[in-house]
Length: 113
Length: 113
Image (tube, rainbow over all chains, first blue to last red; front, side, top):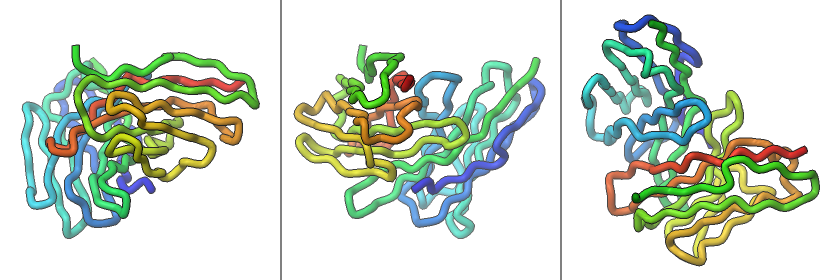
C-alpha cells in the first residue's frame, strides 16, 4: 500500500526561493527516504533519514522527521530552475516478506527563472 | 559503468499479448524491485526479490509474473490478464547490507494498442 502522502501535490516558486514539501505516513518505519524524478526518467535518491534521527542536511537539502506525528518534510533552499522535478518520499518498513519501500504520489515542483 | 539497465525503453503491445520487460544490474545488489507508475498515482510495488529463486508479491501483482534465476536479472512479464497494462515501469535494486537506498533504471514505457 502507498504509505507516504506528499503535500502539496504541486508547487510553483521562483528561483532563489525555498521549497518545502511534506510527507505523512501511517505505520512505523525503519527509515524514510526522499527521491527526485525528472520527467520520463528513473528516480534518483536524495537523502535518507533513520527513524531515530530528527533532522538531516545534505547541501541545499534539509529533511526533518517527526515519528510521533508520522511526518517528514523536505526543504530545498535557494532553489534553481534545475530543481524542477517531481519529489517523492518513500517509507522503508518491514513486512512479513521483508523490507520494501512504499512511495507516495509525489510533489511536482516548478521553479521559474 | 555500474548501474541498472532496463529494456526496451518504449514498447507497444496489442491486447491479449504477453510482454516481458528486462531489468539487469551489475551492482551486485541482493534485492530487486518492480514498480508501476501512472499519472497522479505515484509508484506502486508489483513484485520484489531479496534472493535468487525467491520473490514476493507487492500491492498490485495481479496480471504480472517475475523470475529471479540470476542475481543480476529480474525480468517482469506483463500478461494478458493485466487489465490496464499501459504504464511506466521502473526497476530498482539495492544492497540489503547497505544504506537502504534504491537505485533505479530509466524505466520502460508500455503502451497497449
